[in-house]
Amino acid sequence: MMKILYNKSKKYNDLNKVYQEVSGPGGLKLTEFIADKMDIKPENILLDKLYL
Image (cartoon, rainbow, N blue to C red):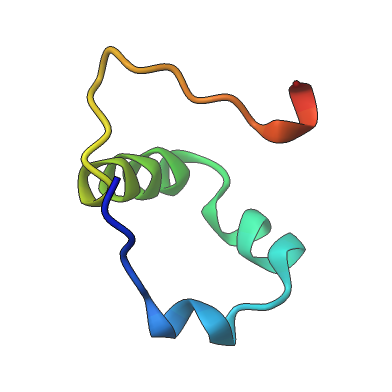
């Protein structure tokens, strides 16, 4: 997979705040945007490492 650098992400170091802001309908839109940028196909399944 190609590594993409997003310099703006460095300014968001409080992940709890980020998660609060993206919960709800906006979260799905953000998730789809990120998946598109990462070229993740709809048939792929992603797992959070906390659940492994």
